[in-house]
Image (cartoon, rainbow over all chains, first blue to last red; front, top):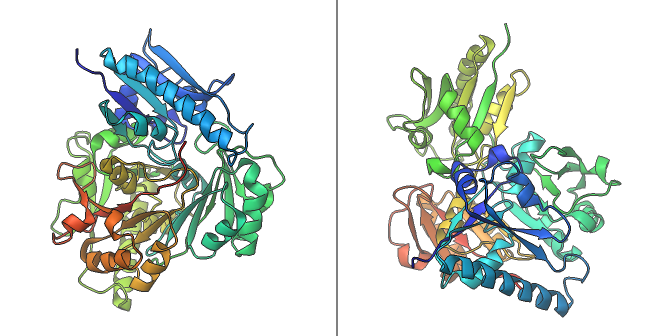
Length: 242
Length: 242
């Protein structure tokens, strides 16, 4: 029996037209399609490939046991997720060991802050795995602003809104271009840090980049709204240009 | 007469299978295809789409008048490139104003340290332009290492090898994950900065990511070799993982 391959297939920022040719082909021909989602929700990754799956494809939803109900710092959060990833691994490994290839749908790029990485770490020593890189959510976001993000010698720093405020401030003050991901309920803290470093007025907020509900606005004009977790803040670099 | 559209089409890191579905379609159906290259060379962007262009497509090579012959800091460098971009703009604008759509091939992502940005800035106020984001060269590079680049709250900093050594050191010492682009003749300086910040042993060097000549090695084992300009250094983050 030949062991099947696990494919970590990046889907890009959300528009199905922005899948790579390779990801598109793998998704359309897959016999087994696994994806993460919050219990009771369709799941963003699955939504991106709506209408693309082959007839009779075996769908394997992997439902997070917890998202924001337990604080990140609580040790139960880690325990809970660790058990979840171990269960997913067991299930996927049974499939690959029976000779089946499995495509795991990954929002954005699989190796850039992705959930798939937790399966990858647990399976890479005993399962053949192929990763298909993809357009990151942040590329989708800066493209949506209509302004290039980095010029010449610009330094780009990517931060996540879950960082402590002092750490955000430390990095925001030193970088030319900035991307802040995982905004959602961290918006107030991120905005304070941007103000403290003089970057607030130049910041853009992009929600649902490249997707039907896309919004692009100056952060200063958008701050009172409720912002989804996957929204992204961009501050563009102003470096050398002939 | 309807004005044509200028398309800034990201090609991704180099493997034609990693173009997005949209970029692939635009490239295959384009009547006018423009691309940058060094005089006398085929050009990397043009090479990526070899075999994909439609019969009779009008090819428009835009040849840099200078690459490394004049130092970056010499004012003649800027003057020379500025004149070049103005000429390209004039030529492309003539085409779009005659009703022709033009696809400009962009290595990597068009808005991320790309040459296309210089045309975009000069044309965006009077020409309809659409940008297609793409997989960055750095995504291709970290995927090639087989190791995820950012976990949990990791900070990622993207630097270019053309930065002064003290600036490289300042940023390398503070970030979790690192990407250094535009290596080439800056390799010695970048290596010294990585050593000064204790990051050297964890650094990987990726040449020609996702392309036929791809090499992936620990920087410490590769440093004596001559490295192309488009090689990339990656230091992976080690952040939170359940």
